[in-house]
Length: 159
Image (cartoon, rainbow, N blue to C red; front, top):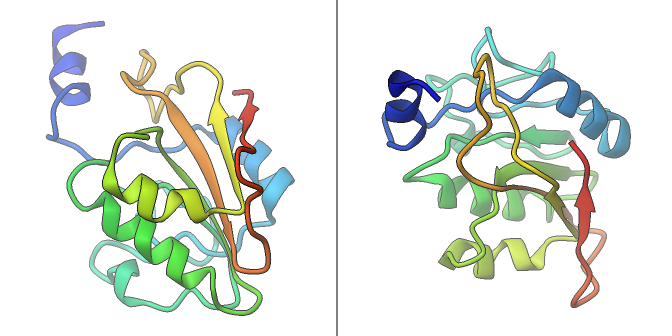
């Protein structure tokens, strides 16, 4: 891993980690089709409907959508996870989030553990145009207000 990549990957200089296209296609097939990406840019969105940082997806309703969320990683990720959980309580709303598997955090225990499904990603993802894998493990969390996770049930998902 070159020095410039290390600086970005091991710091909070960028919270944007573009979802790998092939991985998104697998998630879209399994949990979608997704019709809203609430934290995207025109260059990295995975859905026709999306909110940019200027529009602030945290302040918008996600009700009635099947939502894919790869939130900005770093400070503030807890707000996105809380929003995902809360929005999933609306009728006809499912929220699927690709997040770092940080099981030691407060938000993990307050919200992720209420998910209908948690899938730990085998191996490390390569985000965006990076030549290197992420320095952290990832999880796919499915919030669906019509389902509740069976305690003790988690599943792995292959890249």
